[in-house]
Length: 403
View 1 (cartoon, rainbow, N blue to C red):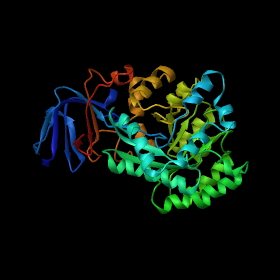
View 2 (cartoon, rainbow, N blue to C red):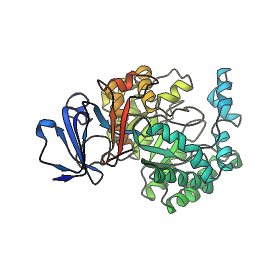
View 3 (tube, one colour):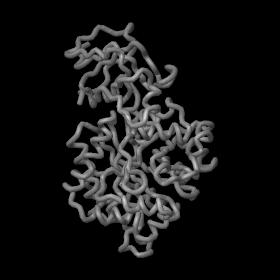
View 4 (cartoon, rainbow, N blue to C red):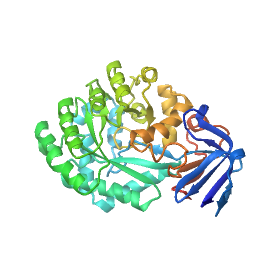
């Protein structure tokens, strides 16, 4: 069989089930053809291949390319002033009610042009790619009107077109109530469903629909309306749920077969059971937990017991998680939430792919999937969650090519 590239003499953390810890194969090899994995397995089983190029890994570990499955990476401005306010005692909710928080970023993002948003966001994307990220989700939600939401998602698509990375987009019009809406949440949800969402879908800019179900955002009934509109347009849903209180958002998300429910600090057992039954992934966001100095930890042991898949993401955003290191998010998930290093790596590979509806193309090293790889100078995979402030990436491969 002719292949474009063969990586040999490596150690593969395939992250496949049924192969033991990390789905490890060592020594092992992997071949790519037309951007996809053509073969992966033990070196002793290597078939007769005719590679155009052979790369000796010299014993290095290879994992699937990392996946950051929850970011708000496209935005303008920053909120360092709010960081100071919180250190002086103000809460996230208090700042939001005073016109700060999400609305501060909305004002800056509305004022920025599409090119300016791309330029401001590219360094954040570059930082993620430099740590082996090959797929990243980017949400809208800092526009809160049809034109600005479309502008954000166009910027996200441009980032994906201009860089060797897969960008998955989520429409998050139901993120906050814009100032011009006054106190009329129902009227604004009408706008989200009848104006913003059709505009976004009309340009093919959204891969999923997200929302923020919280006392300072939208009620479960209001989110239900958004999800029904998404369903009518054939789009999958996701939800920011149970971050600051238990609103029953996770169960609502599961009712709609959501790809994921995210945050989940206040998740109860009924919500866990609903997610398990629906196959909804729990996306843990330790950066926001750390940055907001929260104390209530997501019910990780309860999710383990019920078999809920757990992903890990940066939640990169200017207000509650200005984090552009998925490796640090893995460490935080282990130290703050008590995930094992293997669970943390599964959280940024296999389970992150599921949270984006991309498990058929990414997240594990298997024939037929995109050849997205991260090649590491490490002695064991646990180092990826163990180290802080250190990047052991040797090479990053996207769609079969090293970048």
